[in-house]
Image (tube, rainbow, N blue to C red; front, side, top):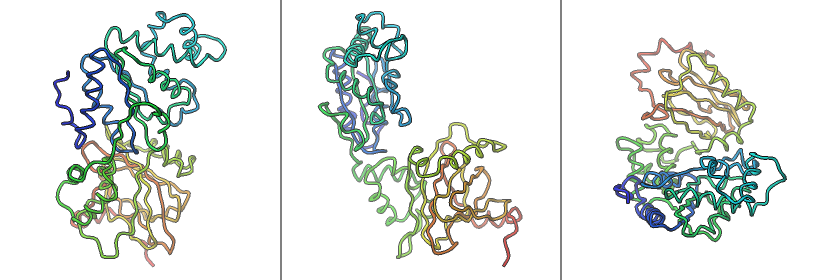
Length: 396
């Protein structure tokens, strides 16, 4: 067994980690083990897969992951899982070897029988596990191509005493059917004490208890939401009490794929090219990225002066955004337009919607340097010191 203490590295996930460790122990003892991790986006399924990989002492580990843009590529996910073991194909029965070689484009032939491909994968994994117990990790299984998902289900239902472990992470409700008939571990939101502790770790220093309560309620124990929602709003906004009438800002965390769907893809790519062509390029090494959709109600003044540690680029979906960077004149970006910020030591004065009686909505991808927040407010003192760097304000 691993010397690592299960559950200590993932806040609030002790029972899940212990269950997965029991599956690992079964594989080491000469059995096979299959489990599906089912839960909503951001709930921590990938972190649990990482726990398995980090505690799989004495086992080989192989991974694959579904990719939404590759869902139409038959056998793509299966190929990613099996490619490290292609040198074992010669040990398979001839019909199975021919089927999997044809499926993977290694030989010509008519489309292979899926039953034979399934048997080939089953035999291949069992053969590899004869040398060392094998753990197969599948993330985002809901985005596997249909054939790969079907064959992995076939394999999962037929693993016996093969010293093979298979852990599939599936986002609900998109891929629940993939786990039909398989053992499941439902990953739910963190309990309130753990959620509160995780939220506190995302914001250093105290902030208004009412806002804390609202954030906890909106996140519903989702770890990603607990970590990212505070970054998506300004730190000062999180720390100060809200007016009684509430907040007119709505922020939605989005995946990059969904963000691209929300925006016109051509304009989104133009914004990306603008970012790539920027000189000097200021993407921090090891940067992380977050895509959010921001919605401003009519007349909302927007975010106060702030800066990003890394660049940001976005697309205005609806309405118009008042936009001003340090050293540049104020401009208005209409719906269908793109914008970008270089990040670093550049002040972004405003991005609000005080432009009429309509709402504004935009999608933006922000990158940040490791260990730094996505957004930092600029103090009044610094604004006064740097006032000479601001372009002249429009008159009239």
